[in-house]
Image (cartoon, rainbow, N blue to C red):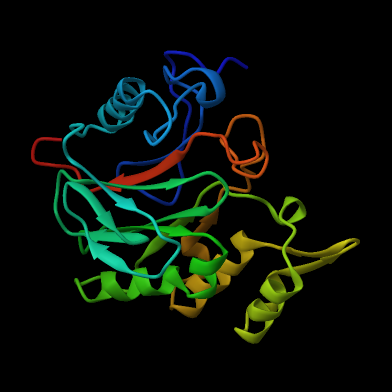
Length: 249
């Protein structure tokens, strides 16, 4: 598969009716180690990344200047979304015409929406964020803005799958002690971690209905995605994006 291409490959959840997507690395103009739809400009050509970001925003009906994103720190802070960059690991919004974005390359992206209440959220969940229940904190922030856990629908996008995610015994112990022991997989050579399953458990614990949860089932180590582990740290980033349509959209 060619990663340097004009055609975007975006993944969507059947549960979410609002504009949203989980990007892949297919459909951008970046080259080399970042070939494709890289959305992180820390090491790649900023002009290529700007074009990639424009393509994603416009594919969903948003302006490239109406994107709220994060300097992610593997914490549990939830921010009220605004255009530009803030520090934290989750965003919530009631503002039409604003596209929320979180970046990943093995960590799990989570998109949430209570369409009736007009509240959306996006969270970045690595093992630290998952352990800190960043998904539940995002639900709490959405509820504070009028959402209901019984109405919120959540989509967990591609991330590193349990069979590929070996962790140390200390991390495994922390998950067991936090009541997330079902996500620890005992394998020859040491424990592995099912972060998708752990985040599903966190969302259920936050009051979401099982039928309102969707997991992509895709692993970020597959060739269509960027993967920090697979590529030994030199790789691009995908985005998970969601937003309330603006007037006239």
